[in-house]
Figure 1 (spheres, helix red, strand yellow):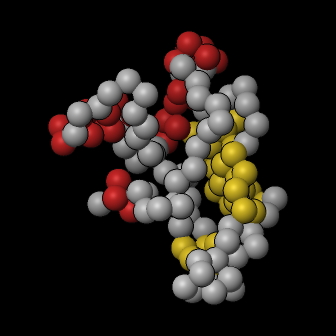
Figure 2: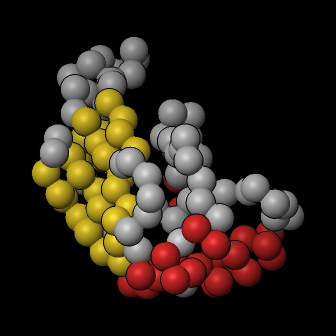
Length: 120
């Protein structure tokens, strides 16, 4: 269940900016390019149009099993997974969107120690 896999404590970050459809250039979400950047190196890049499941399918699918309300967020993931380690910096960039990338430091859990690796 990919929805559950993205919902663990500390595994999901977003913001501080949200865009409404009228703020997307030409209203075309599919034209946006999403990048996964690890320590300044682009590890994955693809357009929203190339996602495994189209946005309209994701909304329809989730609305069959839960009530969706205005402001709800459906996590679609990234264009590619990469291995992370404590001390890394992970960025999500959305090219063509009028905001800065989401940048997060990677920290180890207290139980696992700071040097353990974790997959995304």
